[in-house]
Image 1: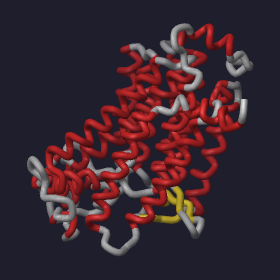
Image 2 (image 1 turned 135 degrees about the vertical axis):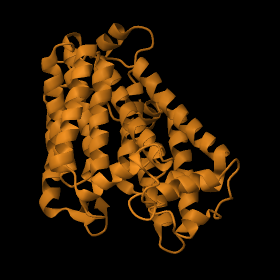
Image 3 (image 1 turned 120 degrees about the horizontal axis):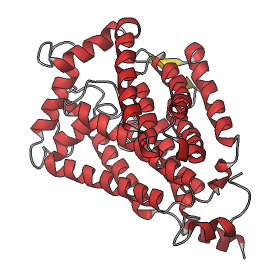
Image 4 (image 1 turned 30 degrees about the horizontal axis):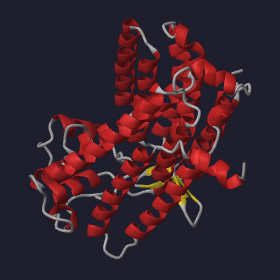
Amino acid sequence: MSVLATVQKKFQSVDWIALSSAVALCVLGLLTMNSFTGQDGLFVRQLIWLGVGVSVFFGASIVDWRFLRRSGVAASIYGVFIIPLLFLLVLGHAVMGAKSWLDFGFAALQPIEFIKLALIIALAKYFSRRHIEIRNIRHMVVSGGYAFLVFVLVALQPDFGGAIIIFLIWLGMVLFSGISRKHLAAVFCLGLVAFSCLWFFGFRDYQKTRILSFVHPMSDIHGAGYNAYQSTIAVGSGQWVGKGIGYGTQSKLRFLPEYQTDFIFAAFAEEWGFVGIGLVFGLFGALFWRIINTAVRAASNFETLFALGVLCYLMAHFVLHTGINMGLLPVTGTTIPFMSYGGSHLLAEFLALGMLSGMNRYSRATNRDALDREFSGGYDR
C-alpha cells in the first residue's frame, strides 16, 4: 500500500461533524473579534492560530494513540507537563496579575491549557485499570492527588478560573467512573472545607469581592460588579436577532471589558441576539454529541474515559463562560472553547478533538474483543 493510500485510510476516521462544528465556532468568534478590534491585529493572529489548530487536528488524527495505554506513559506525560507550571511561579509572564504565560518572544503559551489534557490522560489511565474498584475510597484519594497538585499550582498563579476547570475535570471523570453516593457526599463536604480554607487563607481581596458581588450583583455596579453588570446588559440588549455585526455598542464603546476573551459570548449575543445564541448552543450540542458517540464506540475503557474527560473539559469551559456572561455565575475569567481569542486554548482543543478522531480509527464496531485481537500490539499491558 502506498504512503498516500495509508494516509487516506487514516483520514477516513476523521470526525467531520465535530471538526466542522469547532471551525464554525471559531468563525463566529472571529466575526465578533473583527467587529471591535480595529487595527490591533487580533483577528489576523487568531486566524493564524486557527490554521495552526486545524493542522494540529489533522496531525493528531493520523496518530495511533494506543501507546497511551502503556504503563508509565500517562504518568510520564503528566509529569512532563507539571514542570512548566512550576517554572511559571518563578519565570512566568504576568498578564492581568496572573503568572499564566510562558513568553517565548514570538509567541506566549499557557501551560495550563495542555496540563488539562495531560490530567485527562492520567486519570483515564488510572480509572481504566481500576474501574471495578472505583467504589474504594482509596482510588478517589489517589486520583484526587493528581488533580490537587495541578489545582494548587494553578491557583497560586493565581488563576482561579483555571483551578475550577481542573476540579470539574476530576469530578466529572470520577462521576463517570462510578463513584458511590456516600463518597460523592464526602467530596462535597471536603469541597466546602476547602472553600472555607481558601476564603480565609487563599483568596485575595479582589476574589472575595467578586464572589460577594455575585451574591449581591447590584450592590457595586461601578466597582466589583461592573463586569457582570455590563455583560448582562450586552446579552439582554441583543434581544431576538441582535444589533448586527459590528453594531454592538457595549463592546464597541468598550463598556464591556475583555470582549475578545472572557466576555466574547456577551459581545456575540449583543450582535446576534437569541437566534445567534441558539446557533452557538446548537454547534456545541453537535460537538458534545460527537464526543459522546466516540466514547460509546471506544475500543477500550481508556479511550472511553479519555473521551468523557474531553467532554468534561470542554463542557466545563462552556458552562462557566456562558454562565458568567449571563450573570448566573461569579466572574472568574474563563474562555469559551474555540470562540475566545488565544492560541494556547485553541491548540489544546483542536489537539483533543484530533486525538478523538485518531481513536475512532480503531473504535469497536460490533465486537471490542475482536478489535483487540486484531490490534494486539501489547498496548494494554
